Length: 178
Image (tube, rainbow, N blue to C red; front, side, top):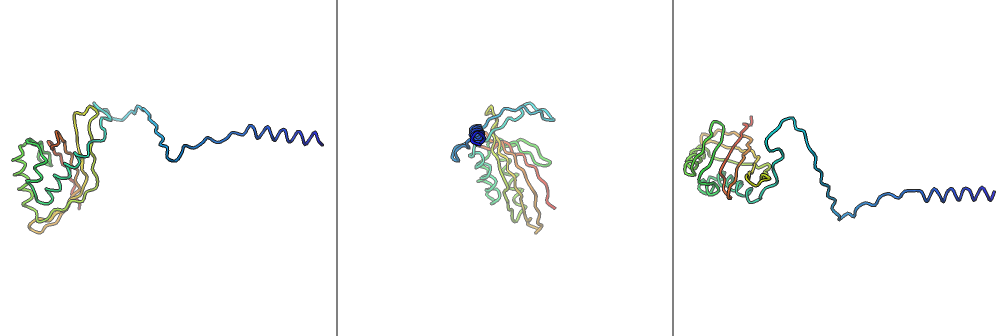
């Protein structure tokens, strides 16, 4: 019986010794960073895939300030954020124009409205990896009432190219809300 008890105690001791301890978890305040380089085979190819990094918040402020001033009917204030020459692309319009020509265009458009209201959804500022291009994209809805009392709204995406702190290109994509 003593041999049998000794055998069980020895077996138990050996099995306790062979148990693996679970790996320690990193401390809660320790940041774990993993970097992976993965080649992705996209179904389409472009010249510079994955070319963008997060851009400057000052560019976002420029784009938002220009839009807010326009929404408030302050065309002159809005134009301070634009360069001397701007490429403007709207539905049915693709033209490079001077700041003065843009002013005339904006005044004509705002003169048609009694009210304009922007509801911002999101924005993103990006810069190309080679630092040659900076863009801000704005996603928002816009509701308005014309001076004739007609109310309407649209979802809008604005892509604004920023150069030396000024907007030099404005591409606007609109979807009417029905």
